[in-house]
Length: 311
Image (cartoon, rainbow, N blue to C red; front, side, top):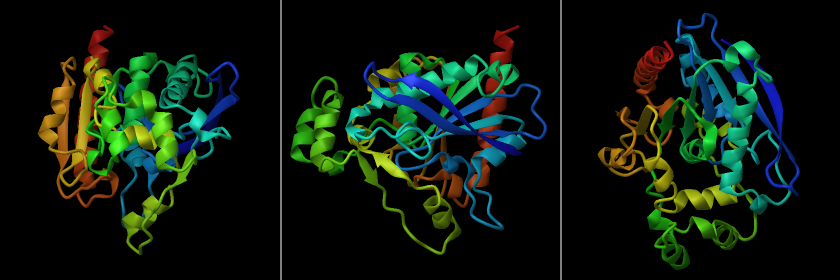
């Protein structure tokens, strides 16, 4: 696997906003597959793009990028706007969740034109990959016109975290839009007018904890608030009509895994994978190798389906 850092200027997200640049890492296989895919990967809340290439030290295999490139696919891992090396607007509350999704969508549009990665790679089918809150951005980007050819959503459901909502948030959550129209107001109240929230990482001598600690970053407050509202992207999930795989841990926070499928009412090609002995981070689970193998098989199947459609 070889890796290259890139940065693309995508322009302004709103007429009076600042110019936005998105930083990403492109991991390329030593030997591409006969039908390679481009995996367009967004990390979860409070994580940088390094989440997809975790390094736990000798004897560990936590890197999703390395596992997927070994299968011949390309892995593009990005820093969402407001995170890592991508542009961070001074006032985080001006950075709406739709804006964050649009930044990813616009980056994909630039890449499809051959910018930064070249015209040959620009022709590859693209799988939108998102972990946790990053899956929210992936799903929303798809709904707003990203045109991913398939979706791989990790540790994600639209159930939010109703157990931590305060009374105002609970009242907003029963609105027809599940409260997403009030996200900025609710986030300002919850996070005390701080648009970027430092995430708390557990310091430990365990390899998994060290690997995760190394890629921690700040959480965009609006995204954090959006993520805890039950039903946050229910409408967008119902509109998905491309192949989709949802993978969660059996100790994850997504609720009963078998209930997740009902949200994807228009996805005629749906795969659910529940990883045993895993919590919210599949890559560092003791059974991660099983997840990597299953995902690689799913990607090969998706590549075959997409290739058949273009014949």
